[in-house]
Structure formats: C-alpha cells, structure tokens
Length: 415
Image 1: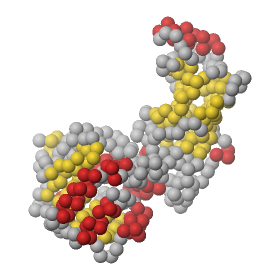
Image 2: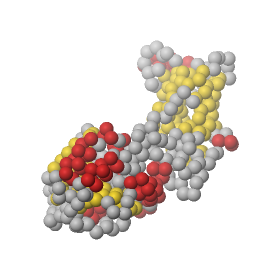
Image 3: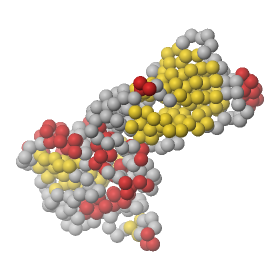
Image 4: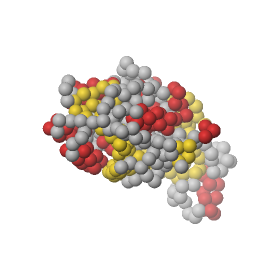
C-alpha cells in the first residue's frame, strides 16, 4: 500500500499497489547511494526528490520458508513554482495542454538493471508532497527504485534513482544476491546454494501465486504434451527407467509415477537443490521403483546408465551459461542412456545474452554454440516457440557432433 501525505491542505488518498514481478520477501533493506536522474529542464534548481532511508524499525529477520514482510520508505517531493510554470509553458509549446503531473514509482527487475516495473502511479496535486510506502515481495539481491515526476503525456520533469541491497538476515543459510549470478560471473557460481534460495523464496512461482515452485512451465496446463509423450514412450515399451534431471518439485511428473509402476518402468529424479530432493523422496520415493538423489550436473558425474534409460532434461538450460550447457550435453552423450530429451526454442536466440540465471534466457540449441543435430522427434512444449527434441544416443550417436566449428577459440559457427 502507498499513502500520500501532503504538507498543504488536501484530502488524504490511499492507493494500493502490488508489484507484479517475481519477488517474494523483503528482509533487510540497506541504501547504498542516491544519484539524481536526468531532468527535462536542468534549471529546476528549486525542485527536488528526496528518498529517505527506511525507518529504524523496518529491519526484519526471516524464516526458512520466507514469511512476507515489508520495509517502509519515504519520498519527499518539492516542486518550485517557477520550475513548474517553465515546464508547463514548454510542455504546452511542444506537447499541447498538460493535464497535470504524476509520480511514477518503479522497482528494477531481476532480469536487467536498466529495466523497471511500474509499481504505482499517483497524481501530484501539490507542490510539496510526502509519499510513504511499503516495499513488499522482494528477494535478496541488488535492486533500485526510480521515482519520476512526469506529465500526462510522459514527459519527464524530474527523476531520481536510489540503489539498495536486500539481504536475508534470518535462518541458517547464507544470503546470495540473486542478481549476481550471470554468465559473466560463472567462476563464482555455487549452483546448489543459489537455486536453493530460488526455491526457498519461491522466485519462479511469485511466492506461490503462479502455481508450481518449479515455475509456471511445470503447471499441469503447461505439461499436457509432456505427459502424453512420456506416457506414450512408456506404454510402447523399450524404456526401462526415466531419468528426470532436474526433477524439480514433481508437480506434473508425480501424477505419472503410477503409470510408470504399472508398466514396470523405474524412475530416478535428480535435482541440484537438496531440500527439493528430500521433500520428493519423503512424498514419492521408495527403495525399489522410485528414487531421488541430489546432483549438480555442472560438476557431478552421472550415475551408471544403460540403453533402456530415457533422460528427460526439461527447462534446465534456460538457467545456465552456454559453457555449462555444452558440458552437460556431452555428459548425456557419453552416459550410456538410450534416448535424450532436451527443450529448445526454434526461432528465439539469446544464446550469447548476459542474463540473471534465475530469470533464464531463450536457448536455441540449433544455433551457435550448440548446433545440435536434427532430433528424430520434435514436440511442442505447450508454449509459443518452445519444443522438446528427442535424440537417440544409445548406439554411440552424438547430439553436438561435428557440425560445430570453434577455430581460433572464436564463437562456434553451425556448418
């Protein structure tokens, strides 16, 4: 909720705003620096935007499951009357009549430091205004808030950006800056701890609002084709075990375990997050037909496999750098399994884009640096441009193959 309180006489207004990004919890908010943003008119010396650090009592601890809390902040806005008149005249000359000024309050996204999500927009009715608010549904990481005074036609009068860090100061696990894990920081990655925090803060499900904690792509309405495909492969015979990595929270695969058992097919689910594996083992596991284990595909060896094994690797490579994805595909090629299933985009291509790992990117395995061979089957993954390909690897066939050229250590080129 955002409350506006003005220093001149006016009705108090109450505006409720809920951030629409993938954020779950605010714990400790620490302001690092404040920088004045660009003004349309540099002569606005009589106007200011002042962001006041949160109240002392706004420092909260958290629990391991992430109980939503809030952190308060104050923004004082003062507009010089002459600045406003100059801006209004200039606006009317260039844009036409101005309906008034508004205040946009925005929060930086986790995808890109230069992108902001609008949290709320308020009419500015007085030259002196105090905006009080509660920041909610945040997760640990480096963020920034942008306060902008803007006209009805979106001409900026003044803007200020304040950077801050959200730290997890509760529980027994170290806080990791979600935004710091990108392909450019690959050497520092601790994938088990990082994705443990992603699950703990329910980043992919927006605090549970979007369904499965493994993300909307694991909801039942987004797995119709996957469930039909797995069932078809199992019922047609030839599959002795489904190796599901990463298995995630089993939101959609859990309903297929009965079918696998009836067909005499075993199941092995593996994931980098230990708590996810433990919960799955407790709910679904048994010593004979269904097993789970923790595994970091970027560094751990695969368990022994045979040609009757079907490897399902769905929605993993969106969240890893290309170097790790290439390493993982090579592991699969040499695993001894019979069939490999990987998800890929066909038209989108963000293979070389820098991105926050938790937020992911659009991986196109048919383009550099992957250049995979054509699969023997390609099935829609219940989303636009997203597919699941199937490759036979049991007879020594390769997925990456020789259609990659990496001469002089430059980017691979598909031949």
